[in-house]
Length: 150
Image 1 (cartoon, rainbow, N blue to C red):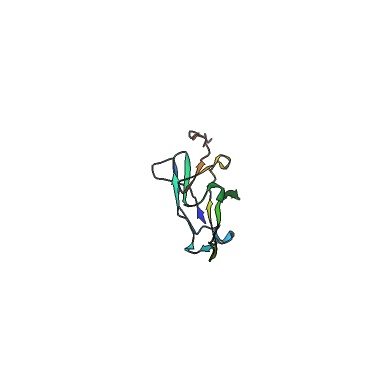
Image 2 (cartoon, rainbow, N blue to C red):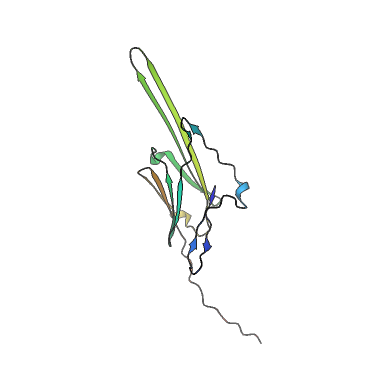
């Protein structure tokens, strides 16, 4: 599970992001299990990019289609998973060959509170799943108000 955490950068009013695998909430969630296929465990690489208006998550998952993916948010956690099952059959007068394979993965991201979850966009193109997570508009900082003490 990856945690998206916003912090204040020095000399910047924009939050930043980093991955944190061992947060206080780490033990509250079920462990991640990777199913293995003929080539071993399939755990795709993910890039997390922060821009001033949004976060982008890119997951490298070639060989899939957009219908293979499932993405959902539950209790502030974005869970992205995919399953692919393939079957092939070849028959000749002297032999019959039937093969199948199954692969799946799951990646989880703990989202910061400043994400507009209802406006998340996801697209799969050229083997990369790209999610755009817009940030909520923050209210402008109010000037300091002096209080008179008598």
